[in-house]
Image 1 (cartoon, rainbow, N blue to C red):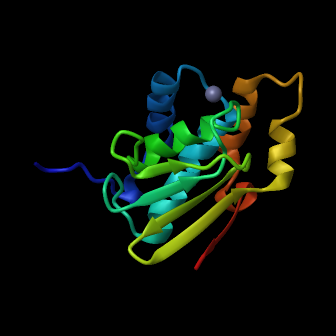
Image 2 (cartoon, rainbow, N blue to C red; image 1 turned 135 degrees about the vertical axis):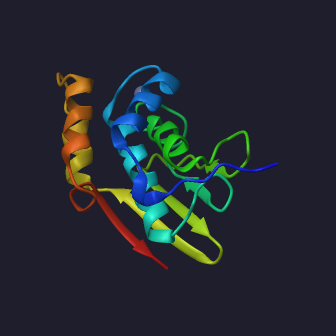
Length: 144
Ligand SMILES: [Zn+2]
């Protein structure tokens, strides 16, 4: 059996968002943030996704922050079904990506989190904002 692999340099964000919206059922800022988190992890860890990576997500399973999980599944190919994504119930918009012995922690910046959590904002508009922000604007990340 041949597994699919992802070339992190040839990722198309718009296609991923379409796929994410189909899979998840709606477009929201945490879905997009999760997609971008996964893309960053593949690049930083030189990963081709699907099988060479494990993820521990700290959101828990309560939306909206848990929507991050679906975004990560879309962009990394790590899935609940394959057992290489683990969800911890810590209520944090943070994930740790593990490849071999290298770990990369990515957390949504507090500033972005409060922007997203603003009430009365249309979630699709917030998602668009997240699309436009750079990885450095969105995340704090470090390898160890
Ligand atoms: Zn959602």
